[in-house]
Length: 92
Image (cartoon, helix red, strand yellow):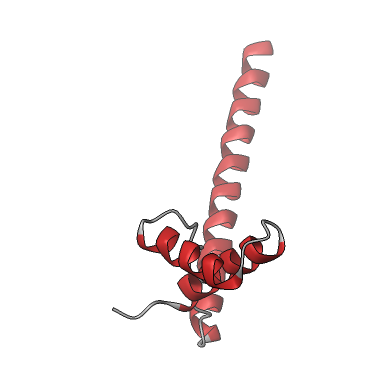
């Protein structure tokens, strides 16, 4: 199975670290990095999420969320007003 871009980058980064920081010879660093990859010791970052090409989907989702938030805010205002009216009735 072919390696992903993220896996290749993690292996390359580990080789560079072992050569530059740890002082290993490049051939030993490469062998160590591939062994670490094979045994699952390398941290492989998750691939970046794909960017949505169609802005209409994003706009529709934004409009839906905005409308939902407006309705929730209206409902909350009505609830607070009702509680306030009840509190006034109880005072009188």
